[in-house]
Amino acid sequence: MKLGAKRHRVTVQRSTIANDTYGEGIETWVELYVTWAEILSLSGEERVRGHQVEGSMTHRMFIRKHPDYDVTNKDRVVYGSRTYDIVSVDDVELRGEQYDMMVREVTT
Image (tube, rainbow, N blue to C red; front, side, top):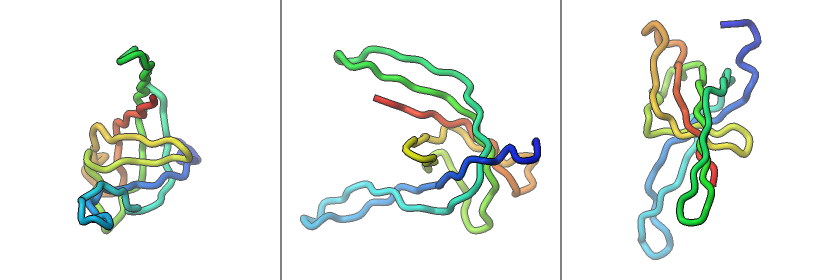
């Protein structure tokens, strides 16, 4: 890992179900923690679905592990106005210090 490679400030979020005023369960995202990340672009694609163009971009992210939270593929990462679904998470060298994640940015 290069010195200074983690220069992107990201937020790790987790999905929760909250009740609205009618008692209906709605999905909301809550912040787990904010950390620095290295983000590498890997690939992208576009396709037409229902007369709309959809694109997806695959990235690799390296972030520090928080001592209180284990990140899973049910969580997501937000960087600025971009949201990334986590595809896979690997604990680098099983040391509990850093995650190597494959993430997918989906745009419509």
